[in-house]
Amino acid sequence: MSDTTPAVEIAATEPTSTPEAAASAAEAEATPAFDPQRRATELAILDALRGVVDPELGMDVVELALIRQIIVGTESSEIRMVLTTPFCPYAGSMVQQIKDQAESVLEHPVKVTLLAERWDPRDAGLMW
Image (cartoon, rainbow, N blue to C red):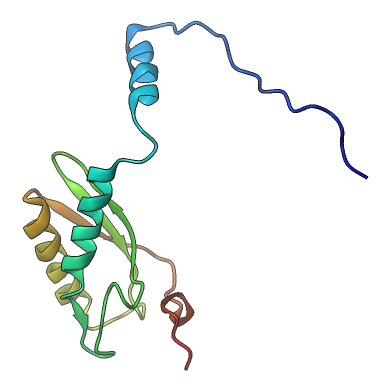
């Protein structure tokens, strides 16, 4: 049995109350869903991060799927990552290498944030 109710799109018609809200709404409409320049920058960062190798596993941080998110900004950027183990003895060194590699591509400050989530080898396609 299928639902024959037609889909209806409802758009909010509330007027914007401030010029800032109107400018923000106009900017959101003008921003494309996919920015090829931003994606090219993200891929260049990932390529640079392939030079950062986890010394215990002998694989790079991209291949291990430790990089969870790259947020590229105009003045500063952020890389969010996880570690292979919660108390990884090489964490400080790897974070600094990731920061240095990303800054070599972006030429502005990069913040590296360690996330609390656990790394799963299956994310990297590894089965032990």
